[in-house]
Length: 167
Image (cartoon, rainbow, N blue to C red; front, side, top):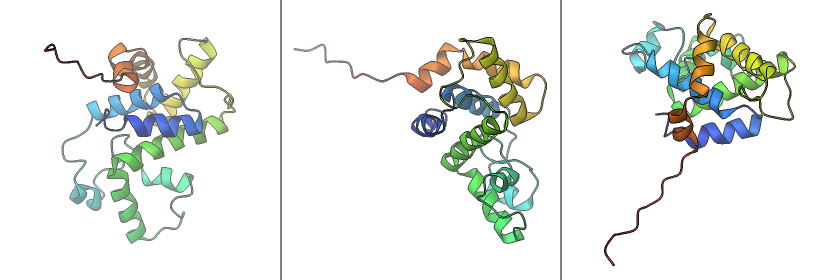
């Protein structure tokens, strides 16, 4: 899923000036901790899970981004939950969440935050991660994943076809 979402991660992150490695790290972590059956439309319709999709977002985030009215009907909420199952929509919403939080925290808009570049950037990225998940151990995990070479490879590598050894 992460490799398939690569173009969307890069596109939406560039548009909102969000570090794509933050987005990839959050998706990677959330997918590792997915509960069985939570991606089932039946489970989503039942309201059994509060968060949905690869980034584990709630309909509350859709309200905060203006994609769902605050006084939404039950039918609108059901439809919104199903939209959260769409990986493409979920990635776009996650990047939008980080952009929204970045504005609220008055983080720099003119450049990407780089964890390895400056301690203030690392702290800001950790804060964004914490605000996404709310668990104290989460930011450290996300910052570690952001430095992981294999995750960098998934996001930035390009496949080259090998020339045939036969001439």
